[in-house]
Length: 303
Image 1: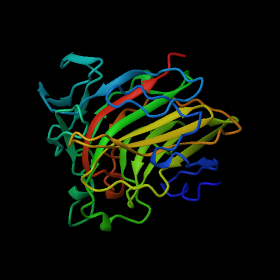
Image 2 (image 1 turned 30 degrees about the horizontal axis):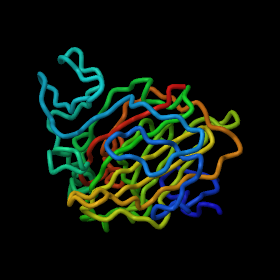
Image 3 (image 1 turned 120 degrees about the vertical axis):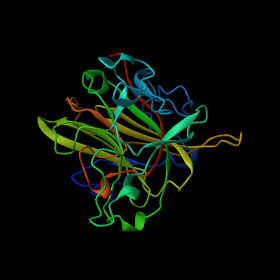
Image 4 (image 1 turned 135 degrees about the vertical axis):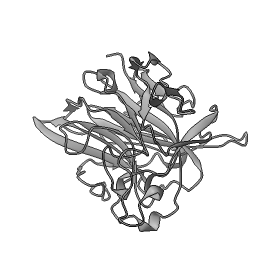
């Protein structure tokens, strides 16, 4: 069946057939990408898929300061000094991001992003960079040259004032590149609190955007989730796990993949930074996520 909700996020168009039979723990497509996140084991495994290895991971549990820079440390390639920050995520010196209770089950704390709640009452705009984390571009944060790729992140959304967002709002949770670029990947949440996973690359010699959403599965305010957005040249996959802190079992609320596309996608490589919490350099409230974010992981296959 055709995804009737695909053309919602600004600039995104897609024409993939979707398989949403993975709801509530039902089997996902055999083409689903295996997760490399070691904090929550995946409940599905794709036939013939190889395990992914983490290329970047940020626990997002604190904001130390180094010299005049606020940052959140990389768990894989942490910086050693102000002159050698490596993969550490950078925050604005007057950031309004703060530390709150954990989202991930094995975590300690998370970072809270005010997002649309930080809008100026006079003009409705949010600060361009105070509600975000900027992770420096690295080529290993791109899918290009690899057969599989996945971005996973933990979130606890805040729905306060969502009524003020436009109907087609898609607050950005994490992204690398813009929809106007030739290459991009992104996880976003709509006003109705459904989730969108999208990749942009080259298909049949032309720039093309592919998007997969959680359909009628919606996040709930102040609940904890792990979102995984996976890519292969012909398949996108999306998994949402509800994380419980009361000792009971986590619940997979969405797990599905697209039917294979006829033409493979390649060329997903850009030199843009990874942005967490909002669209870079944007003052639009529609592009800013409000809520806690925890444990971002970027993973690729070896080949």
